[in-house]
Image (cartoon, rainbow, N blue to C red; front, side, top):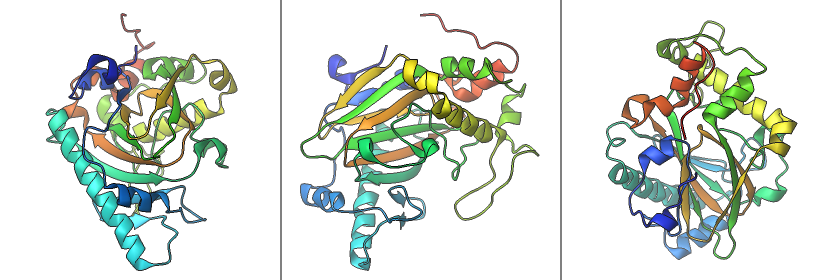
Length: 295
């Protein structure tokens, strides 16, 4: 079952549903969006031709990357609008899920202005293939990835599909490859075999991050999974918002142009259902076959 707030009338955020691997959809974004003129300005932006998949804003460093504009004033304006969006989304999340408020960390804001159905990307970078998220340049160390999306297209919907949740994806992987036996602390620590990248954009990757990247690539490269896995189709209208723990359910962006996306890191200790986190499933898998949940 995938939770849909349109049918329940929920005004707050069902954290337990999210942590179980469900997608939550609000037909109208529950926090203020930038004014119409600012959204129109964002839709005119383009990502730089080389080295950047999209326009990104890092709220912790107040830094914009990937904007093609040659005018410093426009770059500053894009950064200001994305900063305001970030602040509104963060404040709403902290109110909507009090358990997350002490530890939730805002990650990047992404402005997507290209049509997803026609993007030409290498296989492991494609958004239209079912996958779980992993950020090679921003290791999580076991923290969960909560991603929030808003359709800022004034007329057209975004189309997504969702599929299997993490325990089933883990079983798929484990049927072909061994899952290491590690404790939670060992998964979070940087293993000797993991290359440590320490630059302004990449920090030491934990064993957990390295394994999650392998799973990400495994799913995108598995043709049988991509063609045969059961899917649910989602259509997100203009002005709607949806969010999910994108490390916990396979998802694909099939069609749509113009969106704002904000990623957040939720510490394991802040979760309401920590046993549903990928970190917990991996620890159990190392002791034997992952247990199937009831229901």
